[in-house]
Length: 446
Image (cartoon, rainbow, N blue to C red; front, side, top):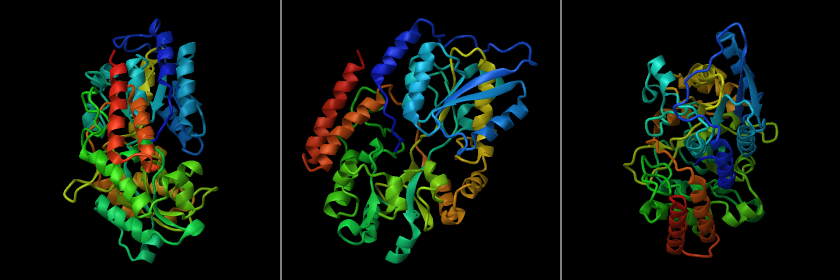
């Protein structure tokens, strides 16, 4: 359930053309440091988060204490708008503006820009520091022999549940459950009729919600196989994903109907905090908001359950996502930029207290304490069940997405939408989606 970002591959191709004549290659010089360390090195850091809300200014302050010759200057959309961020980043690169450090929320945006040679390989820096990425972090984002970024935030997916609704229905907090049990909970949590109806669950329009039984498998979980040449649609897990959606939304009527979701432009935040639904599948980026916000206050305690499994004997798994932080290939301060990347993805993100680090040495319990304490109403967030989910969810194997990953996702979503609106049956959906994806693969293989 990756967070979606609409991105124009055509625009990326244009930018790649603009960059190709002047971009450093993957074997460019490792460091262009300032010889006089008394001079301030200014690093331009591109990202999308809200600086004040997410405690970034504390990050800069603490980093500059440790590295007084380096100053961080941010370029951010400021409102968590990843679409605007990517636009700013690519236009800055095409215009020759200073870029030193960049952050990516989705693996495919990282691989796209690595393919465009916008990212500096970090292998020499890593070798000099004497560690292995797979030993230090839960995610190893290496592409072939090259590592173009280090993992910052680690994303864990789970289910957020309204504890009042669970108690009302006499249901225990799940610790290990299947999709069948999830559907049963959804039915039992559904209440009322008409405009006052409260649904058991809600499926947002993220691409991953259309492949919910496949997306958290340990391996081979994309809509194309690991060879990037073969569609991965005609299989039992995609069929199960479509069946789950149909069962909840159409047969049981225990999930908000898809027609309402798109026609009313419903959002999971409003649906959950306004108690229009009792539980949602979501990522840990929602933890800081679990205690509510000024616009959407929390009036009840939220408890957490692991992501549901297909089979009872399957392991509890979570997607292998998270933010990736890299150094711009044309930066004049690569060594300093790497120092910021390495420091942030270890010490910095931990003291920031807003995200779950991918760094294996981080104290997750302490990080959760900080995140919960910083929420609007900490007593509405159940740490015990949240920590259980974090400690018992196994991250899937990291698969490198293709640069045209989003194009495939979007084509699949368009076909599944017809299914959810009752226009075509399941097998027609799978056949049509497979044909569209095969065509995209073919067009991008020329």
